Length: 181
Image (cartoon, rainbow, N blue to C red; front, side, top):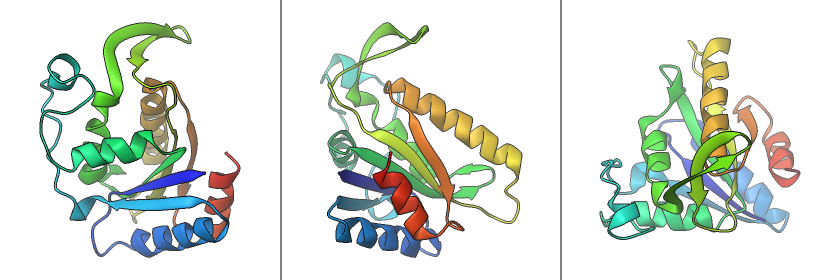
């Protein structure tokens, strides 16, 4: 299984060592695990120009690490978005990275489970999961909102949010959830 961790944390976050431990464990179990450290990448937020749909179908017109994010995303079996919860939501780095995967969808719409969603550009898309670091002020409402938003985001690629877990969970439990989903 190819697992991609998209790490949307700052350099001082404890989630960094947690992700490295999860990658080591997955690799030791024969899985291909990789991390994109967003703070070390150069990519701009999506401009909403939709040129990736009309001028250069499937490819963002802005040449930066956003292309690498898309390539790694679409070739993975599972993508684990890892981020601290900042003011009730994952980091801006994480949000910007997810916005940049819009080229992976067609601009055309279709019915999917009674809802209208963009058509898939590719046959296979990864499953999504969240690994979050709670802050002192994180409450259950924050977690509910995050879960609902990312469950909907997974639906946009006609997939599902396989799990949402936290850095206070033992690493091996998260690795088990990744392997068994």
